Structure formats: structure tokens, C-alpha cells
Length: 335
Image (cartoon, rainbow, N blue to C red):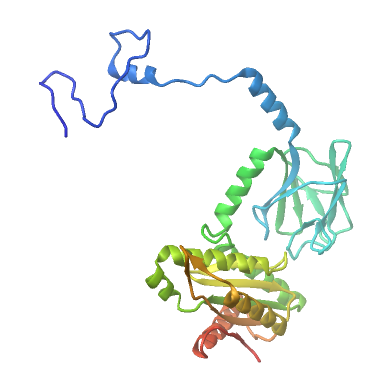
């Protein structure tokens, strides 16, 4: 209950905490000043602060951060005496950009210096706009590889690294499942589709969603539904190659981009995932949740399409065929 004092006096709210004057405070100071003085300030131990700063300086590492290109936002720590950058599976810093050679360049750590060296790449290596063969990297240098990829060389400590990773995850990953979000999926599929068409290589798209997901939400609650999606994402991530991309396409629907995988092999991936989900014990607050998925697969070159959107349409059509056929199964488009 609120009690009002007479006009001209202080109005006190019953919910306000009791005021305690700071020792030594002047009685003539206003209420606002009293409140400010009443807040204590933690005194930092200068010796501890200096020790912490020294430790942080010792933990500083060299990084390459992707500013532009298909791996936008990713950070690569420069570790070891040599790191090869390129599209090859064996590259320590693997970048999926069509304009980058399989072994494009290498980064050398020599006596505290970091050197970048072009390895005879098709499109060359540029540092701050200039074509180079060997170059010692300095803080803030911009490295361009091919037509689309731009890297920034920087030194960062653990705190910087954590912040950068959080920013990357917030921009490109789904907050609930930690899979990539739809925007990342669309951008990546566009790049992979163009590469597959240009080089006449295989590209598979696997799409799946949870059967009768609305029943899970209706019968067990939306928190249970969220728990199902989180577990489903974990199962999916555990079954993929490093170069595969798993994304939450929307709601309870997910998509996988599998580079260099033919249609039948992608169907095997879908079947393994379907079986793993069927056998998994989904539980929420001690209750077992019945969960299965339906899977649709489409691939190049079997799908005669001229755009990434059309390939998604083919995979979606296969997914709905799996639904119409009884759910909890895999359907391939083009067989």
C-alpha cells in the first residue's frame, strides 16, 4: 500500500528499501546525492590487474578472420609452423570459394613473425590490394584470395576470440538448435550450386522434418517441442562430414548440403539419419516422446534445374512424397 505524506514533504513508497546514510555523509546533501554516495565502488588490486594483463598478453594468438566470402565471419587460429590455405581437404585453413585454388597459399610462423606465401595459385594472393609472392603480415592487413574472399590478419586474446565467436554464431546460427540459420543456408547453397554447375560435379540436398510435430507441442507442450529440435540437431551434426552444412530451414524442417555426394549416397545419409532418430530415446521431464522424421533428397546432375531455389523445390517435393507415403521414410527425387 502507498502512503502519502503531507504536501511539501517527501513521498515514500512502501516498496522502497530503507535508506541508510553512508558514514561521514553530509546531512545537507540531496536525496539523489545520498543514493549515489550509497553505492559502493569495488577497489581493484593494481598488482592483480597487472598480472592479469600480462597473462592476457601471453595468450595472444594470430588469426585470420573471414570478412567476405562463403565462410564469412569464421576465425582461423594460426597454429604450427605452416598452415596451407585452400579448397583441398588437406588444407589447414579450408575455404569453399570457387576462385580459390586447392593449395592457394600458406602462412608461416617464423621467430614470432607471420609470413604469407602464394603457392602458384590461379588467381593470386593480394595483401592490401597488392599482388604478393612473400609478405610479412601486420595487424589489420587485408588478404584477398580469388575474386570473393577477403581475410583480415589480427592478433587476439581469448576474450577477443570468444566475443568474435559469439558474434559469428549470433549472425549465422539458429539460436535454439545451433545449426546454421536459413540465411546462411540460402547463401551457401547458392555458392555450392554455382560451383557444381560450373565444374559439373555432384551436389546433394537432403531435407527432412519431424512427423506430426504439432502433436508433440499439443500433447507435451512447446518446451518439449523445443527439446526435440535440440536433440534432433545434435544427432544430425554428429553424423555429418566437416564439409557438410546442416541448417534449420524453418520450424521443424532441416536441410543438409552435401558437396560431392551422388543422389544414392545422399539417400543412404538420409536413411541413416532416419533410423538414428527412430531409435533415439527422446525424453522430456521423464516422459518419452514419439519422434520420427520424413526425408526428401534431390541432387545434381539428376535434377535438371537451373537455380538453387529449384533444387530446394525438388527436395521438398521428395519430402512431401515421403509424407504422403506414410511418413518415417526416405524418398529420392529422380529415381
